[in-house]
Image 1 (cartoon, rainbow, N blue to C red):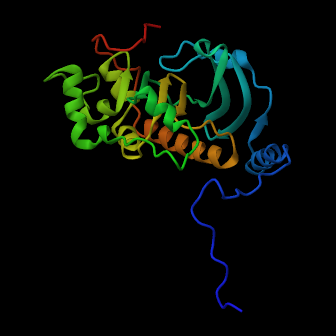
Image 2 (image 1 turned 90 degrees about the vertical axis):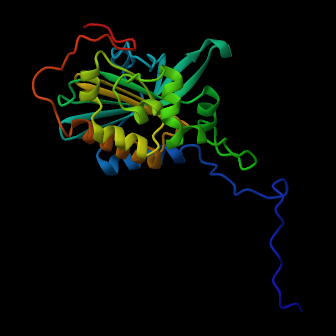
Image 3 (image 1 turned 180 degrees about the vertical axis):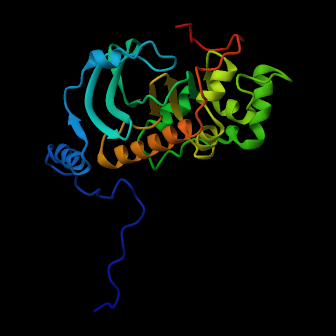
Length: 263
């Protein structure tokens, strides 16, 4: 009798048997409901589409054509709504693309700005695809620190300050804001540092009384993903409101890039 145990199977993905998934289709729904109840959140299967469309127009985000599930939470003076939003894709024969978008309302938000990660469409699609062990995502080395200032110079030319005057942040994100001063008020240093250092990739829009956010990646609507979304949303909100400017939003009278118009 051999003293050795049977060796494990070789590294052949075609011969490997993956663990069987749960056969109960309602298991995920029950887990989500239990998670929301344990944390005191409200889970809604039929959110109000008209309320979300009322946020339009937005700069980089879309007005959803239909909605999936919604989670509502209250944190002090901030109300949070996280929803599955579907964007129609006419080029795909009427198929819709799902995004998980967070809406936050708070009287502490007073300024207008919108940012979107500078990433090519192919890179965004890779991030939204589930992990494939046979395909390693392409490196994002083009966004290394030493390359960002050169990227700004190639984009705007030498000596151009950009929108905010922050070369590193503006190489990381596209920015739309009515004026430079209002953009600096909406995107303070603490928030810019958080987004760049944390490797954030997505869309973030501020307006008086509200904020909208989504991140690039698979649209996961499960307890672990929602916990991560709420944690990140709290960090962004705290960084954005840590130092508030007194009085009305500042104005420089300088035309800015982006699609913001006078209100």
